[in-house]
Structures are given as C-alpha cells and as structure tokens.
Amino acid sequence: MRHLLSTADLDRDTAVHILDTAAQMAATQSREIKKLPTLRGRTVVNLFFEDSTRTRISFETAAKRLSADVINFSAKGSSVSKGESLKDTALTLQAMGADAVVIRHQSSGAPHTLAHAGWVDGAVINAGDGTHQHPTQALLDAYTIRRHLAGGSVSADVTGRDLAGLKVAIVGDVLHSRVARSNVLLLRTLGADVTLVAPPTLVPVGVEAWPCRVSYHLDEVIRDQQPDAIMMLRVQRERMSANGAGGGAFFPNPLEYTRGFGLDARRLALLPDHTIVMHPGPMNRGLEISADAADSARAVIVEQVANGVAVRMAVLYLLMSGDPAGASQVQSQSLSNQRVGIA
Ligand code: NCD
Image (cartoon, rainbow, N blue to C red; front, side, top):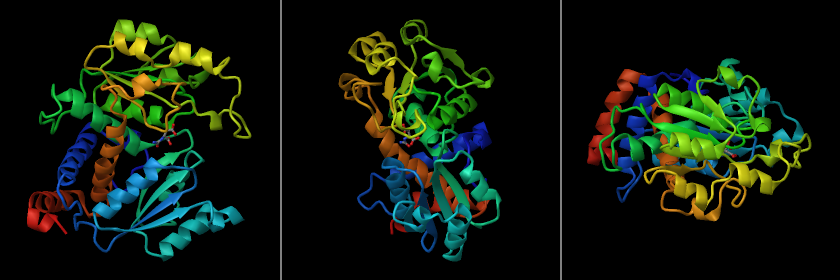
C-alpha cells in the first residue's frame, strides 16, 4: 500500500493489520514518554483546504509521536486564497521534501489526483474529500467497535479479529457523509452487518449498490435489529445549499428531524445494554443527538478521538517506514523494545 485514499482499497487482512498495528501504537501511548523514534528525519505535511479540528490535530499528534517533522498548511492564510492551484501547491510541497501529504479537500477526488498526477513522490493520505471518503475515520471507528465488542470485553485481546457478526446502524445525513461511505465499505469488509438509517431525502442515489441495508425508520431498526453499535452522523448544514448557508429542503424543520432520527434518552433505553454510541464529531447537540445520549456511559465519542491518534500513527508508520515486510520487523523491534522504543 503506497497511499491511503479510500476504504475500498483495503482488503480484510490489510485492514486487520492496520488495526493490530494501531493497538500496538496505543499501548505505547500509556507510557510516560509517548514519543517513538520511528519516523525521525521524515516530514509530514498536513494540507487542509477545508475546516477541521480533530482530524488535523490528530494527524499532527500522530506524526509528532512518531518523531516526524510536521508542516501544517491550511488554505486560509496561504496562497491558495490567492487562487494558487492544487498542482502548484503540490509542487511547492514536493520541493520542500514532503515524505507524506495528509490532505483534506472540499472536492471529492482531490487526494486521488494528488497521488496519481505525479506531482508529489510521498505517500498521500486522504483526510476527507468532499462527500466521498474519510478512510482514517472509518479505521478509528472500526478500531473502537472492535475494542468494545469483538472480544466480549474491552480488556480482551482482539488481535487478528474482524467484526464478523456485529450489527452497526449508521444514522442521519448519509447523503453528505464521507464518514458513512467509508464506514459502509470498511465495516462490511471486516464482516459487520451495516444498516443505514435516514430520511429518504438524505439517502444518496445509487445506495442499492452499497453493501448494506437501508431503512427510513430508526425506531424499527432499534426494535428489530438491536444494533451493537449506533453511529450518529452530523447533519451537515454547510453542504445543504449552494451558498453554504445551510437549511435547504432536506427535512421540514429541526424538530421533525430530531423526532424521527435523533438519538435521545428514550431511544437509548430501547437499545441493548452493551450497545455503544458513536459520533465522528463535531456534534450538533439537540439535533442528531441529545445531551443525555452524548454524555451517557455508553457513548464512546471521546474515546473515538483518542483512538484516532493511534490509528493515524499506524497508518503513517505503515506507509512511511519502507516496504511492508521490512516494516513489520521494524515495528515489532521498535514497539516491543522499551529502550529503542522511547526517544
Ligand atoms: C467528519 C468529517 O469531517 O467528515 N468529522 C471528522 O472528521 N471528525 C464528519 C463531519 O464533519 O460531520
């Protein structure tokens, strides 16, 4: 694997290997000194054309924990706001010697262009492109689900395991969600049974071809399927009208949306005790998720953020530390040997 552009490119074994590597990375993060020397002397550029809090900080933290140098580049305040093209921006980064480029872009396909146009030599990692893909989010979600549900308890060793037999409901604004698209593919590859739940206006055209079920009724899905994990999606108001002002005619009004598709204390009580509540953030509290649900003991939303660092460490490490066979050797050496592992 040279780039990480889409969860469609991951087969089961590769995905499980990334999750296993992330678990090893996570184990190093409970040490007092969290920094590993693995990517010393390498440069990671964070190229963000769209707003982000957690994903950008998470990639930056992950790269720094692996001792890489990090350059943060955001479109606001750069020559992009003067109209510089993606190509010229990429050529500049290449001239600065970027070994990996983490890109978030409002256009679906921009990371693919960057990876395949020959403008940069380094690995390209998609940190969210338009409504298309957000593969590291899906990986951190799969990691979180596996940790809680795959082995029967959070302390069980889940190394090598996939998500076979688990039921996941993904609820809300599927139409605008790269998180949903990435998760449907990855969770299915890992053996989970996925159901999308949304009002008909927020279900994408062509969804029949996706490897999942679709329902327009959240209460029915909760009653009939009793999902093991319920993932609430943000209502992406900024993508709902041409001028970004939000609103649009995708649902009658916020109250109606919440009644039909919001997770609240009543619905939470109808879910099995072991069901985990997920949200990629940022949350619209009171719209797709109530404060009771977001702050309940079954919510793993803050943990998803923490797991994001371990997962992104694993991805950077696997893409940047040479050939895959050599990489796993370096990995077991640098991660298991305390003396080498701590920088
Ligand atoms: C998501 C994104 O940007 O696609 N957030 C994230 O990366 N944590 C989901 C969203 O914005 O709703």
